[in-house]
Length: 312
Image (tube, rainbow, N blue to C red):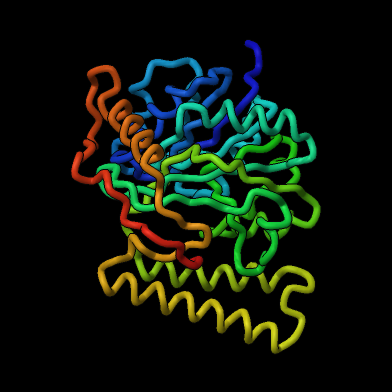
C-alpha cells in the first residue's frame, strides 16, 4: 500500500459526544491523501464504536484498553505515522474543508518552517460562534514571549513527521503538553501561523481545577528551561503574572461568563466568516441525511466576542 502524504493523529478519551462530528470534518477535506489515526485512550463510553462506524480505509483504529494519557498516545501515533507530514486534531474540534490542503501547500513552499498552525473560530454549545483567534503569523511574533505562552494552537499543528520524531512529547506532562514541547524546541525550530481560519475550536466549559493545574504546570515547564528564570526577581515576575491571570479566570468562571475568558489575538468574526462557519456546521451536522447528536441553533449566529482580549 502506498504511504499517504499526511498522517492525522487524533487520540481520544470519552469523546463519544463530539467524535463523530470531528471525523466527519476530516472526511470532508478537499485534500484526500491522508491516514487518520484514531487511538482510544481507555475510554469507557461509546467512542470506539463511533470510530468503527465509519467505512473508510483511511481510518486506522486501535485500542488496548489502557489509560496512558494524551502525550503517550501522541508519541504512539508519531511512531505509527506513515505520512511525510503529521497533523494534530482534537476529538472535539471541527476542521474546515481546506485545512489540510492549505497547510500542506504552505509547508511545501516554506521549507524553512518546521511547524505551522492557523486561525480558528472558537465556538460553544451547538456550534455557537464566540470569537475568532487571529494569532501572529511569523516566528518572531509567535515566540516573542515564550515564557508566557505561544499563540500556536495545537489542534491545528502540522509539520514534518521527522520534526515530531525529534521533539517527542514529554509523557510525564498530563496537561499543556504542547506548550512544554514548544518551550523545548522553539530556539532550534521555525514556527508559522496561516492567517485564515482553518478550524472550529470547541470551548464549552472551563473548570477552575483544570485551570489551576494548567498554570502550575506551565510554571514548572518554564522553570525547567535553561536561563528562563535564573534569579529570584524573574521567578517572582512569572509567579505574579500567572497568579493575576488565574485570578481573572476565576472571576470569569464564577461570574458565569467563562466563554469570554480572554485570549491573546481574539477578534470578532466578520459576517462572511460567520456565514462560512454556519454552512460548515449545517453540512457536517446533517452529513448526507445522517444527523449527528449535535444540531445547529439558528439563533446562535451572532458572536459573543466584540473586542480583543488578553491571554488567559
